Every structure is written in C-alpha cells, then in structure tokens.
Length: 172
Length: 172
DNA sequence: GCCCTTATTTTGAGTTATTCACGATAAGTG
DNA sequence: CACTTATCGTGAATAACTCAAAATAAGGGC
Image 1 (tube, rainbow over the protein chains, first blue to last red):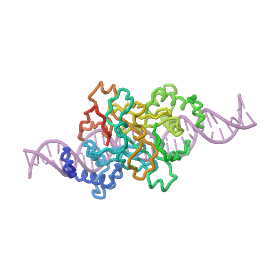
Image 2 (cartoon, each protein chain N blue to C red):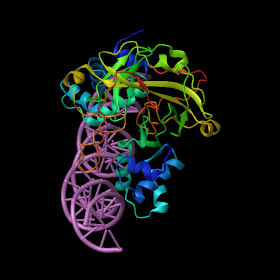
Image 3 (spheres, rainbow over the protein chains, first blue to last red):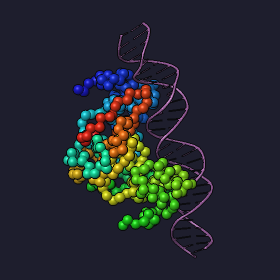
Image 4 (tube, protein in one colour):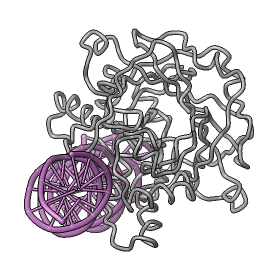
C-alpha cells in the first residue's frame, strides 16, 4: 500500500517530476511546514525551483490527496503527508509549531453535534491550542493566535493573554 | 450581565465611539461576517468609515474579548459576539457560510488528547465541515475548503470532491 | 461648558501568502 | 524519435491585512 512516491504520483495521474518528488521528500522530513519553508528546503536539491512551482506542486498534490493542507488561525498554510489515520493537531500559540495528536478519547460522540442548523455534516476537525515544550521552557513570549496576533502595535490596546491555565477550556 | 454595548466598551477601558457601536451592532445582526462585509454594513450608518478603522475596531474588540474571531480554512477572518457559552461551528464547504453548533455530546472526553507531544494544552476547538441547507438544495457546486479552494484553474488537475456522504468522517 | 491629554480614526503605503496568465519546457505515449 | 499536453518559470495581480504618522475627538478635571 505505501508505494513509492513515483507510483503514488502515477496512480494519481500526475507526472513524475523532480519538483514533485523533492517537495514530497521535504514534507516527509519536515511535516507541518509552510510553502515558504518547503521551498527553501527543496532548493537545497533543486536550486532553480520557483516559489510558484512549489505552490503549484502543493496545490496539485493536495488535490490529488497525496498531501493534506492545514490552515491554523494565524499561520500560513501547512502541509503534511496524508496518512490514512485519524489524527488531529496541537498548535503552539507562541511559536506556531504544530504537532500531531494521535486521537482523542470518546471520539465518536465528539463528532455528533446536537444541532446542525440544516447542514449535512461531512467531517469534524479538532485543533488543540497550547504551548510547546520549547516555548514553555523559554516562557514569557506573546501569543500568536487564538485570534489575537500579538498586538505589538503601540497604538492599540494590548490585553494580556498570559494566564496559561493548566486545565483545558472548551473554546466557546 | 448583558449590559449595553456602551458599558461593555467602558468596562473594557475602551472609548465609546460611533464606529465601535456600529460594528458591534452589525455583528449582532450578521454574525460570522468578515471585515469586508461588516465594513459595508457599517457604512450604511456611518458612510465615511474607513476599511482600516473597521479592522482597528475588530482588532481592539477582539483583544478586549468583546468579539471572537474565527478563521476557518479557506475564508478570511469572521467575527461573532462573544457569548460565554461553549459552542463550535459548522462551515459550509460550498459557500463558506458558518453556523453555530451548540454543543457536542461527550464534550469532556473529547478534549482529552491521548498524546500531547510535550505541549501544555489550553483549549480545544472543533470545526465541522458540511454543506448548508441552501447549497444542498442547489447541489453540484464546487467545494471551497477543507484545503482545496475549488480549482477552477484549467492548468491544474481538479479532483472531484463531490461525494457528500451522509456519515460523519473523522478528519485524519 | 471648556480645556487638555491621549485614545481613535483617517490616509496612505507596505506586507504576506497566495493565485492568475501564458509562453517555454519536458513527461509520457505511440 | 516525434508529438501532445501537463508542468514550470516569469511576471503581474490580488486579498486581507498590518504599520506609521498626522488629524480628530472621547472623557476626565476645572
């Protein structure tokens, strides 16, 4: 099942090109990277590749379901190899680092909303927000997300978001 | 507790201005709107308000926790009045419309990830993806999100994302 | 009510992360 | 090997904001 990148591309009716292989390899090694980072990594092997080509590749591979695109609030799009498993993500609200969360307890009930306003629901996506080990060690920086991208702007009121409680809050 | 917009602003140490009141009112009437839409609504009352002012206001009110900012993949930021309750969102993958989901069953266990990679977890956020009633009625359009913004580009392979299964899939 | 301090707003430019177009190039097919 | 057409590169365009600094206007004090 886990065939070579080449055959995965062929199976998806995509041509096998150096760029695509390099991008796939880069994501394999550095999961959850954004397009810019991937471009820099790929250029180590393929110096001439353009930023747009990387975007094209990411777009095509995402469409072909060889990659999954994740877009946490406050960051640019990140990519990961699509594994068939069920996993979610934890995003560091300080530095934006993303890690996989294998699964959650009580999974099935989680995905049963009580009131769907007439929507036909297809998928459920869970994102955890927290602080990664490195940032916990360094302490004291400013949050990048749940909604407020570190107001460094002196003109606008900056409300401290510091209190990192240990208990998990349900996000409204 | 549900005091007037004026006193909510004052309590947050923010000055009461026409722009802020208008934005609050607009969001009250049109929840889950983006900055651009809100700007257009507000201009019905306050023709001269600038786009940047609307952004300022949204930023300040979000910081003050009078608003909540939500950023579903594939859309620009949306805003809603912050109600103290626990609710999540359903996003229509065709038109981007957002609706509230009051709560999910088995809430507490959902928020207990099995493996946090050293993160200190703070909050959990659940987003459901599906098709809204209107789009279900109209049928056949192309998906705007989980990751693929309707590739209308003829150059790039467009894989059909159509199959709207009725069962809920866990999103990897 | 008027003055003063300073939070907001406006104006205008700058950024970031992408997408669009299209000629040049190179996979894969016969 | 020739040929068709998917892919790449170049360059421009866009969306959605953010940043900066001068102009304006809340709200407190007199």
